[in-house]
Length: 274
Image (cartoon, rainbow, N blue to C red; front, side, top):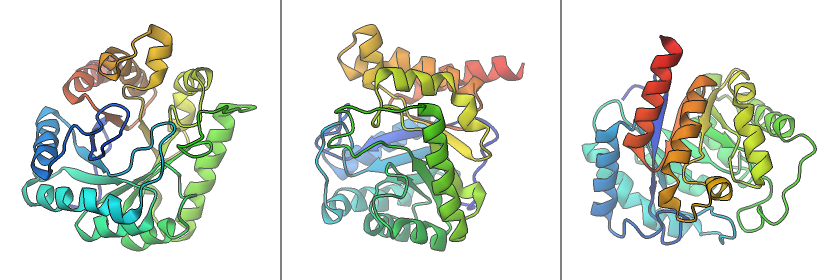
């Protein structure tokens, strides 16, 4: 497909975790075929990007080696790329340049880096050299410890400053501004009050001059507000944030439940543009 994606309308990124331990769908796709089948279902339901992850980043999770991440994702990527419809992008969720390079070699167009380029100093030069889309996310700490006691003086300002600074670094290495996506990182080193502040101020992130991504799908935030402890019971809460994001000019919505969020996004978009 052409290397420039159309962000004029809100885009859904479908989550495909090929991990045994992700917080919501860990172990759901134990074979390459089951993972590819799930990707095709999400595409049929309206996802324009499939985000494949081989390392869980849920609170308290341990790191997964690049070798193991590659073992989990390479066959899924290669099989999916053989049959994926035109106009659909494949993304890989990793903080490792080694994993990212293997994915890019297989035709992956986007790297979704939850460390925002802080985990592996080779990541930014790699995405700049390969002209890949690069999602820079904010996370305070690391997945193992990030929820122990996150604190901010001004969460919105601190997160904005981090994202813009990291974007400037990779632009200085040669990556075009149009290839950068900023994600404030709901649930990554944030308490409920911080997540709510971010969601209230989404327009401050979308007005920074970069494409933006919201990843609130099935997060613990909804449990803390509504008492729904099963992640699969948090779809309505996710849809509420997706509608909110549309009104705040967010470009990409990273979700587990594609058709439900697409309905919320389409309705919100038509209200906004009507």
